[in-house]
Length: 305
Image 1 (cartoon, rainbow, N blue to C red):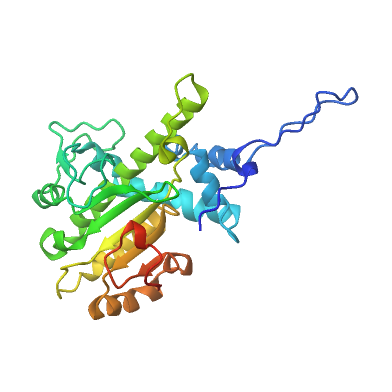
Image 2: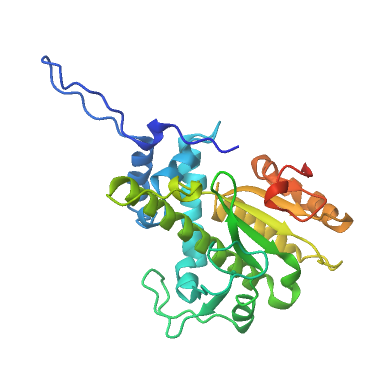
């Protein structure tokens, strides 16, 4: 379950010596979040643009995880992956279509998971001056197969995957993974904007929003609903399974709070049994296998794998 990071991870300790009249003032204590930023920033200055203090604190505060492991295996490894994958070039090449929400998309939750290619791509954050998406990537970006579907009771963004709309064999594993990266990046942008707006409402003179999700900070993790209805009996490519596992464990550490999958048939159960040994225990514990398609009101149904 989501536990807010301890306050000491987010703020410098407040040693109030204002009333002391003897001795020099005590130096301020630096928080682990600030220490991590300072150590990573020289080689990866993009950490300040990509990761909030709250997210870094959540990575640091996982039970039994050392500071060094959080820094090197989670934060630094994810930043290195972003560079090698050139995520900024991919994001700069597309724009999310803010049109009518597709089937199953939450009203006002950010559209239907459709992305359209930008003409004359020159990304300010990417290493490539021009990124040329394949025709297959452009096509899958029109599918709306993965979209924001509102928020759960704790304010997390829900991503709903309509697996029947994705033909991994036709679009190819690489472009299928790129599409998922685009949607995750868009969801993180939604989270960041809403939390920034929330902070502005608290610190400014604007009226506070009465809506529960709007009025409180959104956890910087997501819930994934994988709707396997009408999936058929053609197994997914092994590369798709390992690629998605890499996104979960390396590219976006601690960004996925829970994964609900259903309805699970015999083929999917065998796939899960094949892949699960390659997942870390913490990742396996996030997966919930269900007899029916995941719904907001049915999160407790099924059994965890």
